[in-house]
Image (tube, each protein chain N blue to C red):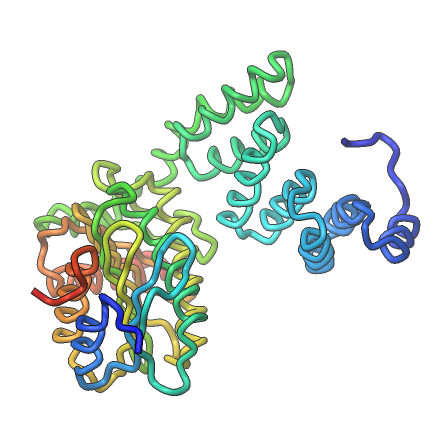
Length: 121
Length: 264
């Protein structure tokens, strides 16, 4: 079975209660690099939409393309969190029952490790 | 190549219907757009581009259609594609200049306009756009300064500014100085596009109504909250705790509501 360098950090994020999916996405083209999603979540479509959202949000914060960013959208039944730096981001679909503070920390921490080996430090 | 001879809708429709390889779809789409049928124009153009993905005029027309639909970011993308395919495409340079002027993005507008001027030095539109460009600094400042949020901004350490915009990204009142974020109009338009994208994501994932969005960069945090049909954007320094930023956003919402109700 193929193993991905992002397996460790994705497993760590998905282990949290209330996380419906976690994806590593290439911002430039919206393609899924790796991911874990629950049944009913179409990873490729979510990644494409999230990458587009992230690109547009990045234009507003004027730190240049390479700066690190965190985007969170809150909706009635859950949240989307996207964190990353440069062209690679980690996004998570978070249910309402999840602890948002813990989810934020987990997503940010995982994103910090994206450009390294993918293992949590 | 643009022709002075304009064919009727019937002739164009017949040509597109009988010859799928024809590029008459561009002219037909433009005709529909000019008649206000932008949905049909969009469908025609997107379908035509599947067969002619590098057709410069088709990408230009698609940009015009998006612009007519108020989808500025998509229009910008299409006109940028045109300039990648044909760097000397004057209509795209002028269209981009207009779009940047409308958004208050002076530097970007100037870059496009200089390129247009090099191609057509005596062009009346170029001259007119220079006049518009020279006045946008004062106009945007005058339009966006309202003082409505001044007390909040001055009283909350680390708060950079507040903007109230309508659902199309037009600034109603407020100001965010541009040290850390884009110019007010560009910011409003970009965040409005991002909000529309966020709503699509939330709908796709059946997450319900969008309640708000936070974008954190290395120097600033933007809190975007819907306020009826309008949007309130609060910029705080990145080192302001998230909870405090949320409180400032809540207060800004209350002030904006009073302002819109005429109480302020």
